[in-house]
Length: 509
Ligand SMILES: Cc1cc2nc3c(=O)[nH]c(=O)nc-3n(C[C@H](O)[C@H](O)[C@H](O)COP(=O)(O)OP(=O)(O)OC[C@H]3O[C@@H](n4cnc5c(N)ncnc54)[C@H](O)[C@@H]3O)c2cc1C
Image: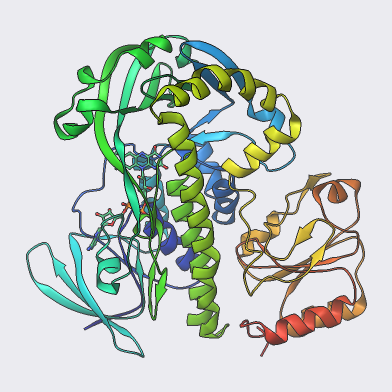
């Protein structure tokens, strides 16, 4: 019988990132995929700033930037008239090294992750399907079926269901998937063409009828159209062709399509599963949450799930943390998934609702109000922070404690690069560490030494204060770059108390 520490089911972006982050922390997972061949369709395009920040840990962001397309601005159109132009450089600057939207088609993204995994000695086992599993207490027993039909039993300490919206793992666990399905059908079309919407920026058209967004792809004259169709056409989604979709929104954006490279339609659901964990099995990515692609959040959230779980599994498997650490995965990720599904639902409903009132709101009031709102710096910054997932935090988690300056336990460590010193560089170690901006006490140094914690002291600069740090405060940072503890006063004893009650075990023991 095959035995492994972690059996990952599904080699989409979520499963691949989980395998990579585990490998980077010394855990060789087994990753299986039912499909014989990798997918060659572009699907999710947007790689958000927070994902790129996390990708820095493994040096992946440089690869994505080299191969993808950087979008500098978003344009909003209403019935063919441009009503707002939103350049990213003005809103995200100083918040993140990635103050833009990066477009990188999912098939290319998966190829990159697979190559990186191979470089770490792990290959995806294709043509292997999970049929079922039983949690036997000390381990799990999974039944796998190979392409030639033969069955295999695999014993694993943990099982990660990264097996997409129709997840077998979710079905075996019996975890419900409450929510609903939108009436409208989405279509995606990768095209070569011409027109003002092919200027390398993102364009969104709001209309009385169908919704349309034009995403630039790498190379000139290439774009992805994402739109909705409703009325009687939605009922025949499976046979719908590009020629059948409404020309109105496309004409509004003056899109001239010269060549159609890929066209697909799909129904969109908004659902979050009831449990992200049951015993030794976990649900991540589309297996746990699905929603409209409005805002380009889906794949990024799956990647976030994977990075959240990877360091916890690695710590437990290496004996560096108590298994209770794994309880925090569901608490930290399910709240965000529910909030995300509710928000994307509101945005999508606004963009596509039918009726005279909805039309009035969308085509008369929105063109007046949106440019005024976007003229306000704080509104633009809030929008960027939200969509890029920089605001995603774990303040409600049992692992989070304290506040110092504007930084709370559970927040993403704010990014500062000043005089050539980038405070995210130390996060590449993927380990617990302490940051101090200013001076630190000898007692703090002593606690860090005993506990095996890296201590990084950054001489005070105004830029740290602007980012929200308090001078001389202590920030205990988790392996995934989120602040666990923020302590202004009595730092050594606060740190000792925190470590004594946390599931993390001292590394030096
Ligand atoms: C046509 C289309 C367009 C999309 N466009 C966008 C977009 O513009 N923006 C956006 O954010 N998202 C978009 N999405 C959604 C996005 O693709 C998903 O959010 C993303 O793929 C989720 O990644 P995942 O790894 O969690 O799941 P998946 O990518 O679904 O991967 C799951 C994998 O598990 C495998 N698997 C399933 N069951 C088993 C089993 N029993 N045994 C072994 N393997 C199994 C599957 O074959 C699959 O490869 C789109 C999806 C589609 C289909």
